Length: 495
Image 1 (tube, rainbow, N blue to C red):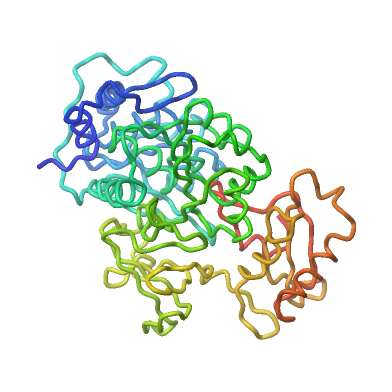
Image 2 (cartoon, rainbow, N blue to C red):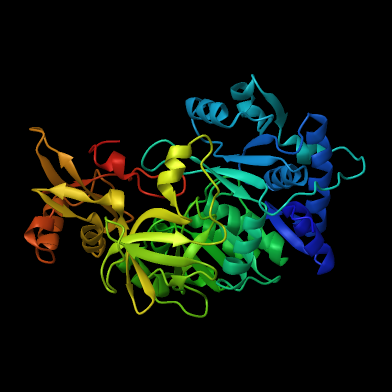
């Protein structure tokens, strides 16, 4: 049986009668499943005309849109490997990724064409505006389930991005294990993902799940703000919302409860949702977040709450097909109820990092993924306890900033918080908190006593060694495009 992912999606649409159903809502233009797969097949002809063959790599650097979907599926049909890249990276970053993946062809917008002058280039917008050639659609290459399908780069929160290689069989598994078993996605659902398709979370949410289940997704070429998210939910009757904690925090401040009546599932990933924020969601927006955790290396989620069993403040249970272990630094299993380093093993693990065999060997050990997350398990339910690289050393004591941040976030005037050990003017490391004030309060006009009030707030709720020595009000925290906090920048004290 041909395991070509694009062919399997097209076959499911035909088999289940989804060809006429809406697959995507891009602006005010609906695209049916049949139209998407036809465009993808014709686009494959175009790419083949540019020399793309089975086994080649095609770099895809563009905003979410029908052209992105068609381009990815076309690459898959040819048996080539799509390299998914954030279009908003700097020219230097793009140059580094080009050197790393050595693509046969680059699919991107005309505005970025100058970055790809040394490579064969196709303006991705032409795939839709001018349409692909009207020749007979290209047939799908016959590939095995383990054949490389796409390469996705890690978000680079702790350093240089690494290209994780995934196979044709992987998205089928997480469509079933997460899309169906965890979220119960059905043909009548309409999804909106704040995370974009060039990231693992958004790729599953906006490409894999809709096309595999016959449902629909709303596409936005940019990251929508709170008011726009609310408007899109109302306009399209969104039933499944995928976002990150920082975005949910902004939504809470809109107090737009009436606008989210259509949402049956609101998924949160990327980083742990602070307890105070989770508690505000039901009153402010009318729903409770369904938290999950995954990674680029895992393809999608490996531990999750479900629509049927959601325990707020936790990561839920292992996703079907996945095993989790909590280990100490020596690699031994920890006792139940004890914080340990989280290791995961499952069916959609990446095969390797591109061009990085030694890093691969340290990350993927005997089939187990070192996630670099810390967690605790009670009665089979996992709770996140930060990242192994989040730990701060203050006065010879190692501590996680997560607990301190949760305390600060419980203050009514705090929207976001980050805590790190930052060198002072004498280069002595002190615990400092950075906070983004609640809506209506900017760094320039925040109450003059707010930093002192927050120190007192923390002192009344935390042991002395965990109380920040100072609090700094900032307009924003340094985050990746996926919404993850860049802790290595927080530790510098400026960004």
